Image 1 (spheres, rainbow, N blue to C red):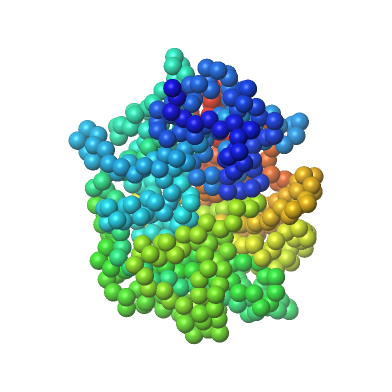
Image 2 (cartoon, rainbow, N blue to C red):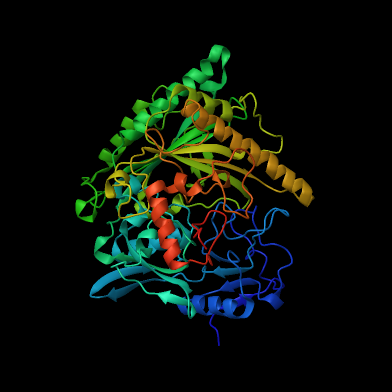
Length: 578
């Protein structure tokens, strides 16, 4: 008897299992229990193996028809793909759902103790367990419902990354169910020796390319110590100081502000992390925000024995406060001294990801670090969303900052926002980055598949909208097309300005280091048989995500592990010779 649970399209619990966080993507209508189509819920690695072999033996799936989900927070259609029209051929028929594989345990392998995390364990469960049982942490994300499956394999970064690097910098390796020529599928056991390079590929190369990852292994003696406490404040940045653009004054002020933010963020101590939530101006009275967290206590340092560079702890609240004061002083022309603005203690919604929460703005919080993590781990609404990203090495050039200003104020002359866009839910989030991230792994092909190790800022473009009751399918499709087309064009205008017209994308070079795979974007290109986003397409999506050297190695691994492309999706690594 199989251990997995099959959920057919006719089951009462199928709605909700047929889609993820992004409501744009759901399974195609017309899937049928007779064909075994639907969702396969697994609780163990053996369940995954049984489900895959049963699907393979009974239903002869084509390339790309089997997909995987853990937490469901993929921004694009990697799991829940429907055919868009007659021009696209690929669709999801079978979903391996790992959301019930939530274990966090210990294993001894070849005399070494490992903390083992299953793919359905959420960010919050991981941090809570590591903190309570080991006094440890991983520098992962803050959204509580994001799960390990996609988050870790794509890199995994969060508010502790400038102190400790990326989650994958601590990943010893994985267990994975992979295609097997004789058995259909087989369990590839964890082995730190990594003769097949799947451990390496899982350190940032992304999920779902080669098989189904069922366990992540971290050496027990090589995980960072959790900090004791954290300060947090959301600093108000009023749009009123930029709203009047007479003779270009608003653009000039905004440019100076953005350049000052880059400088201030690049000087921050490793214990600090900022998220610049630069939201759309719907009214001159609107307020943007810069969120800053600073951890402190004896456990707030980093030892180079874990990799990277030594960072001494900030042991006192006074020291942590000084980090916040120094940062705000760099931006004193644009933000008030903390706890002195007219918005002090007002309730404020932090839009977007990561850190979607209701807080008292311009109010310094001081909590145990684990409690602060809980405060800031909101997931936000399940709605439609479009996302884009970039890694930035150098400061904003004037034309680039002006283009950002024009986008956020609906002043791009040839690209005005459609009436269907929810401007109040549109933002460019610009996070501080670098420091330990840039010291944990170096080289074009290092110990991880993350080659972007020179950047000091990381951007995430976000827009959200809801499908209102009574909206027809055709209307919803048109609304989506209008919003995504506008959003993509705005992004292209910004990077055309940033590259002096050389590219409409953040191509790898001395200014940018491409895009983040865990913030996927189909405008960058898609595999054959899939529909790209509207607008200009970049094409080489693996190259812009990973850099050419890493992309080439991922393709080599794919050819060896999954030559028939059993596992594939719109932006997966493929064996092109199959």
